[in-house]
Length: 496
Image (cartoon, rainbow, N blue to C red; front, side, top):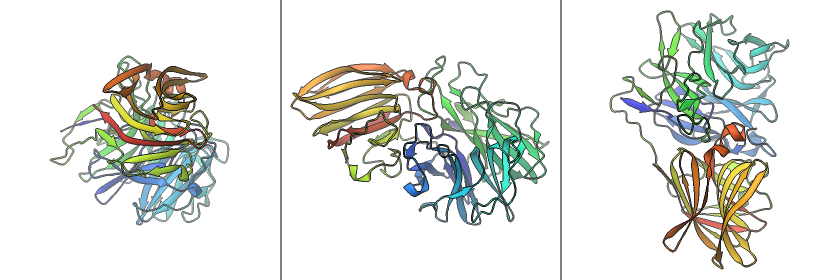
């Protein structure tokens, strides 16, 4: 069969995966968005269903005042003795911690903190020993992949932190994961920075703490030399074995907006790449060490079909699963109905690193049509194509002294401009439409059976290459203005 990458589309970076019985479970980074750490399950590695989040309470994660691309970095999920563990970093507070649950569909514990620095923490269980790893600097000041043993009940360090591998010389050594495969210990990592130079590298040794010998042909996986290739930034990932004994790498990458246009705005996504072990115990990955948009494989069980959801509405999504907030929301400002959404605005706007009245879905593909009816009492409400507080495009209805108007506003860095307004008089309701392509967003007002174009803007100004950071575009519904009340209905997001 053929399968297509990415297998999870949109801003879901830094995937980690574990397998329990016949089910795979996967987590991703969430940065400043809440709930934190999206959680997925799958039976076949291709079709993933989001089942919730690991961090659903304010007591689990500090996000107040966190700038965009701060907050929750690079989780790892593991299962041991009937219990699930998820370890991650709050990069803003510089704390590594883990939470646990005995019910993957239930609530997770409050954080257990580990006194070891760095980011991208990993847990490795062997017998009665639990190894905790991150990238950073050890107790002697030596940089690299840093490891200690911990008491899993308390997070207390049982040994000093020690640097066990310094990588292959690439910048930003990160994303350590440790495995015991056939009695040999494999240490997988990422180097090169999570941009166009990203790569996966690994080493192996005879004990969990090394010494480690680097794979002679590192990097084992990278698309860094594929100019004009849609998939870039292949790296940070996690190994998994399927029921047939075959191994795979679930890893991040991103799709640039055009074959020769080196910008990306959908965020880092989840890709699946086959791994093959040789007789010498070293493994290779992908097609000559690269990840493809389409792989042909006979590894999948007969009858496996890769499916994709193309339409998202209020009715066919779960507010508690697919939707997200900016930092910790004030819940009293949200009425989440079966077919409508009511938002109460505050003085906080989308331009602040705070929690405006905002709820959003990740944009999952380049070509889309987003539509929603919005009615308003006062203030402003609408749809935002949101990268961060300094980079977002807004299509909204707002109240003026003479009535109401629909506006197209572009926010790019320090430049904030209302590009077009359409006066709709006393009418306090508007049908808003945004059409997305690889390279542009078009902003429209639907009225009297026609669609009036307010204007358009390039997608590249919402890309990480322009905005910076590690997130991706969120399709957000928002209201702003003290006491403003807005009702949203007939929401749809359709992908080609």
